[in-house]
Length: 232
Image (cartoon, rainbow, N blue to C red; front, top):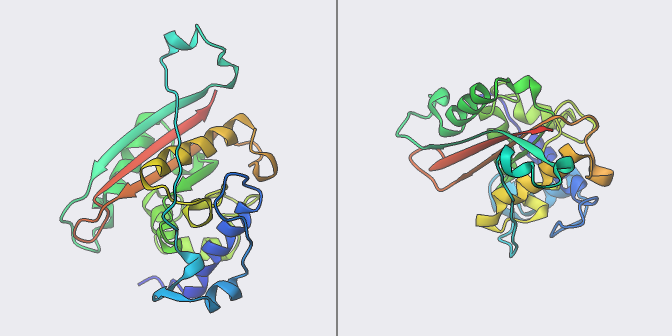
């Protein structure tokens, strides 16, 4: 419908593998060119092996507390939870994108936080495949419909670009420990907002978005979660 190309999907994967070389916790820390990704083994057309996430072993945890509890702790490195929204899938038609669970969750999260997509500094999105990043960027309204692929090809989603995405390497190279994946996204975003991400630090990061999803229902994810974090 929008003219998204296989090369644009490969550009997403190349960007995420590039980010991983500065991510010490990533399962794979190897850079791939777009050409190498296009030439790799096909898993399910048009997806090649470097475009797909592994199933990984791993764990992640987060500590969440109230403002009252924070007063009893050292809150110098605390990060604010601005919104966290969970929405289920529906029996919508394929073209009814505005009814998608990711879109509805993102819309509600922005409203709760009192911000918009243009305020987001950095994002971690669920790239079970490289195409998944394109779809989630569009559902979160971080790019217009059809612009997820071109944005990656133009370098807008790289560190230093307009909206850096999956700075730890994404599921494709950081790994995908399934149930731990959402918390792993939050861990990376907390590091970014604290200014502790080292060589993959997004300069001036103040608002971060995590988008994750699971299962499948009709033409979309079975469930989607959007979390917005803010620099304290």
